[in-house]
Image (cartoon, rainbow, N blue to C red):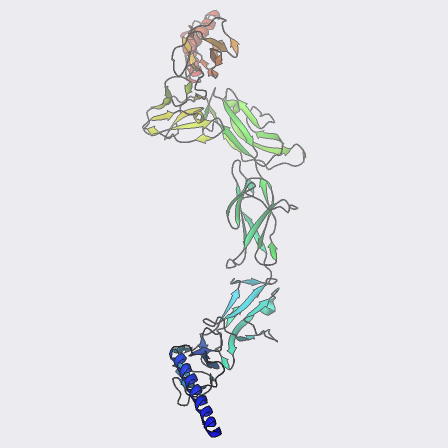
Length: 595
């Protein structure tokens, strides 16, 4: 009985083991126990000469003792352990690796294939950061070794450099405050385990002495309304990476802004004020400063209007202009004309004569410091001619001084010329050379406030007409004075009227001459039957409490009146000779040509 029980025990034990193994095999067949090949490195690439380890891991078979089988390229005796170690791999080791495990009666399936790729590493490259072609003493530069495709690998680096007694093992060599002794060739290579890459090509680092920035000016005199261009640079011209900072006055530490100068490009500005200008160029550390240079002020003499020739009786203004901040100036003139100019910034000649002809130049003297003066300006020649050129004339249609906005006004040049241009001198002192809408000899204007100006015609050969005033009324609801554009001949009749945009003829209008009410009763128009020199002056009109702008009416002397006066004087002096009468007529004609 005891023997029977013993055999029964072994039978049931064997049966239990058989069912357990059967269940385990069933689990393996269901894929619960799987083999996988993994690389025991985090490298993204494997290079020839590296030592690698592949490991076969069985998931779900913990607690079992496994034997391993491998399939691998380029091997006749694969290992039977879980690790497959390859020392100094070569390109021939590239391929697919699989593994499986067995334990007692169990056998897993083959793992998925693991692809191993072994390649030759690229040649290292040495770079400079920053990559400036020229490095100066005192700057900081980093020499870097880069291996293309070797990112993420644990490389140890070797360097070759003339100055490096203890070369670094990292991929960067940082030079703080470089000196001339850091100049030379640099090369590197990478090492990983027993593998060495090639040596890189040599890059040459050249460290030069600390440079000095240079400041140049295209002119040291600032013209009126103009500017001087300053250029800051660092030599040699191959030097790069510079940013430039500008300062005005020797002790100023605040850099110039767009309110102080016009910035054209990195290293170039335009300035219109006198002063001592400095610049500095900066890149990295330290910043390098320039020499100082002075942009001094020189006055400019201008003529208004700026005609090439002035005729007797015309009005001309000679102006001394100094452009340069808020400085207050006293003015000094120098001229060889017979009439000396006053010590003011402008000299207004109301009725020019040949005695005003000459060269004019000026300079300024600071009111706050009388010993501080500018240079003398360049001379401007004023020529006053006794002969009036009547070859050119200007007519205005409609023939009046004042106009409403958006009125159509035509300025027509007349004379024996084929080429014309209408010139304009505006209220703000600007000279315009051409008409926007010029058809033949006629300039058409659709008036706006900016068209208030002095106009004249100029031929292609330099002949020009007398000037006329055009005034544009900005108040669309206010009246305008209708007065002639050209001077009125003494003894002739003239009518002045008042007009609204919506009503051309007005009654109940008051007229003023030089701000004095002419008559205390309203009327429709002001008629002067025989104009005299005393009628010359400013006129304006008032309608329903609103006043027009005032306009100047000029009066020129009549040839007949002058002749009669001279003949009367001759008669009183009993000059009966025809010769004297001829002289009187000749003088009269000469005088008349001056008007």
